[in-house]
Length: 328
Image 1: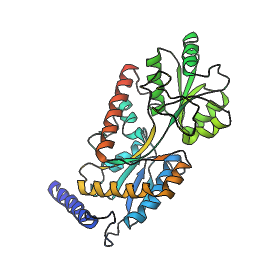
Image 2: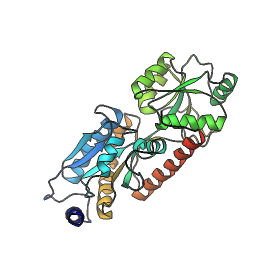
Image 3: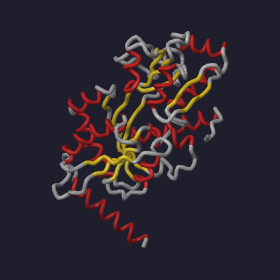
Image 4: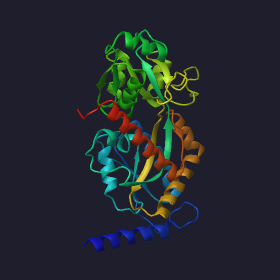
């Protein structure tokens, strides 16, 4: 039975590889099955919107239907990741995900049901957007140095919000605590919207969030930006220094979305998918639509994306260990 299943998967992969060929990134007209792009979050959220922008153009590039399938739930979207991890490695089921299901989630949760470095083969990075360290305006700090000084003078008094226990911004602020030698109280929420509401009302005084959702509130003065968690300043907030400038070079972690396929997907198929994403993200209309959300289209090689996943996983595993973070 196992041998038969393996031969069937190899036959499917070979058929697709033959269909896509090694020329321009267009699938053969004989290939009619849709490509499923799994998104591990509910429809209507930021990840879903960006996935649909990309999928619309990618379908035209490949000459076949690309459908978005939402599978919300689990740590960092791990429910959708598990579906892809167990899918046939034939290029027809791929995962578009932030780091939650590949790096931060596995670093915190030990029993997700898959190993992110073994269950998938990287296809490529899709986009990045800066993350901003912001505070409630009534907190009497305007710089990262003032924030640290205030936290040291008032240990445990500052509460910081996150979009959920173990997500990237949570671990980033745990890393900040370790680097600065300060004590703050973590308050996890169920998603970005309630976390931002808490920051806007002063229920928490500090948070890290991508510009895709925080920029408008910063521009309106409803929250105060202290630093961009990046090595370079963002044009959207040119007067806001980076965390590197503020003296915290380890606190550099943009929000990103990338694509992986099931382990065992043949290199020719991975290369063809990567080429299709490259063509999609090179289109000015796609880049402009992403820019409207504060996102920068960015596609690299599968190897570079694989290194990013491995490096971030190792980083967050170290933070989890050093901060003694355990699953709540």
